[in-house]
Length: 159
Image 1 (cartoon, rainbow, N blue to C red):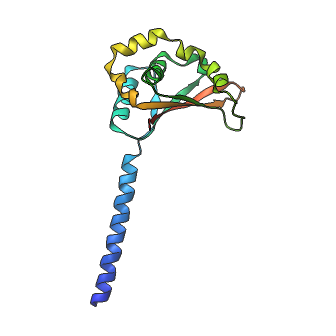
Image 2: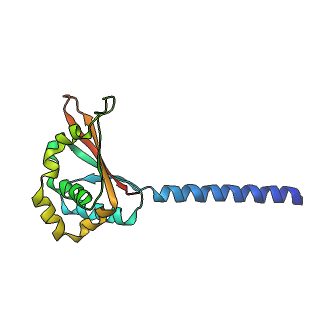
Image 3: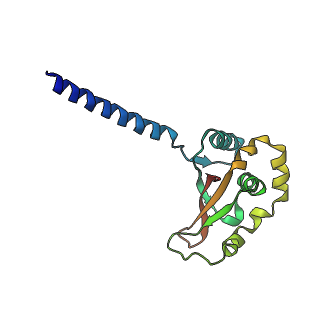
């Protein structure tokens, strides 16, 4: 092999390895969604994910719930975001018009912000400090019966 071919092969190999390293780095930084289950293990998993990742963290459900019946364990996390100055945004179901006032959708989540008990529990739990640098996006969808349900929660970094 002459020197031109060796140089071309070496350059090609460097380009390939640089591209593969970049893809690996991208793959390593994307956090997996956390599945909600009403156990303390969920709190530990979410705390760890929020502390170790700067990206958005999604919480998926095995059984989707009405916004008015969000489990207390999740209410605590959302309340921690709100009480620490974070935003709580609501994404309406796909293909539905966005209301002019977010308060209309927030009305669906009335029980979410009225949980003084949940805030008292938050103060006792240092692990919820991880939520204090986040906002929450609540994704809504309609189920087969036409009812609005929570599809997932996304904890996004504050900018």
